[in-house]
Length: 401
Image 1 (cartoon, rainbow, N blue to C red):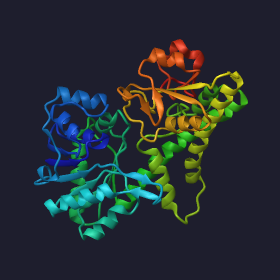
Image 2 (image 1 turned 30 degrees about the vertical axis):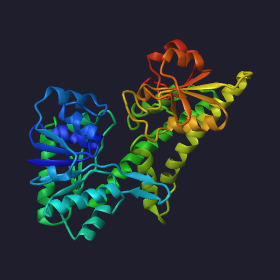
Image 3 (image 1 turned 180 degrees about the vertical axis):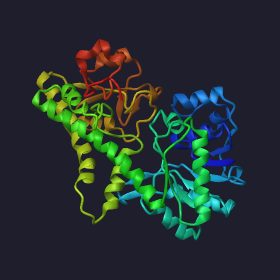
Image 4 (image 1 turned 60 degrees about the vertical axis):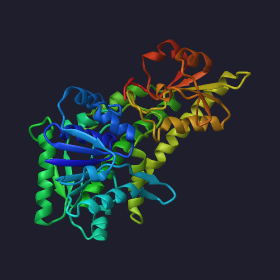
């Protein structure tokens, strides 16, 4: 089979690499440097498995910058472009998806188009109606940042949103079979449903995970205020097999590519439908970040230093081994402390070559960074901070994501 995948981020590139072992794949991206690296079999994003597959396997994979080079004769065109939540509009911005669909249909009026980008509930049906075209589908991804290829190779499930027609059902079965065949599992649970239901699955799944993050963060807030050991409470709670010892490590708040925009979008989807929980997830994350700011401020005020305290931010990223800090809770905490008048110093190798970030000084030398900071904020702790443990403020109980 031949696939054209538009967008070489975590979603698009992981799919491209996986499918190109046994299929012809052309990935399209507007960034020249990404295209060059992929054609040189180097990963433009941080993902150990993608890096391994690109360097060690024979892949029928090419990267280009123009749709017309990839769309013709493709069995499926996959749209994996970014969609961000537009706070002013109060909805997800699907401009990039609209544009790609238009471009594909101009080149091939009979293409099977599979949307992988996260979109509002009802989007796929609406674009079908606007284009008077039925072969547009929605199939959400469930990937972890830095482990995207692994999660495609060992999927927990495959969800596919298709129409009721026989041709659409056959296309759905064909696409799902291709994903299962490219995976490392003998069988994979899958569900074929209406597009709007598949779109809702994506938003509710990520909102549930965000809720779990928010729950353990609020547990940790309670423990911090009451002088209790959060780790003991977490372990006592999570020994219940219905809850489980996973996804339970406190943090400064959830962030990254998906959770902030997906929870806000789901809240918007409710409209006039009565709810309490979904709104609470969004608000809980704001509250948590504010709590961290206030607690750090309180700690520094108790030190009563004559000079203005220097707050060190150790890594902007939310997860270890990541190269992404989009919508990072760390940045919101940093900005909150800056508003309170503290001098900020940032250490993060991904900012190498820059002297400042958002008006704050970037210190490239770790030893100098630790010496300058009166307190070091670390969303996740690692061995580099072992010699400065007395300065470190974190809510990380397990030294893991």
